[in-house]
Image (tube, rainbow, N blue to C red; front, side, top):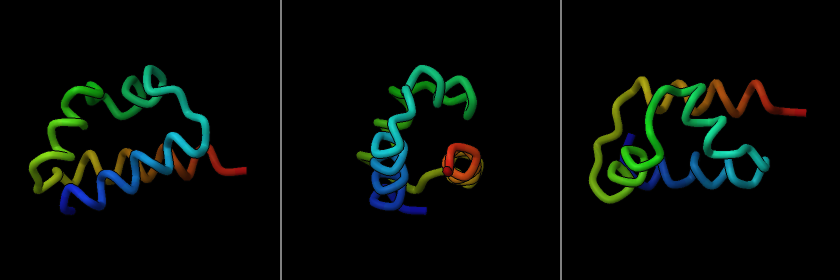
Length: 60
């Protein structure tokens, strides 16, 4: 995944109203690291999968 894809996932997290403290605990990646990847990809697959899983868990 490129950095633009990560930015889109991060925007979805914010749109769903998920707190970043909660999100970073669940995906086990600090927010600062996520922001670093938004500036320079590629984004590790594990981060992508964990963010997508977090979003799926919070649907509805």
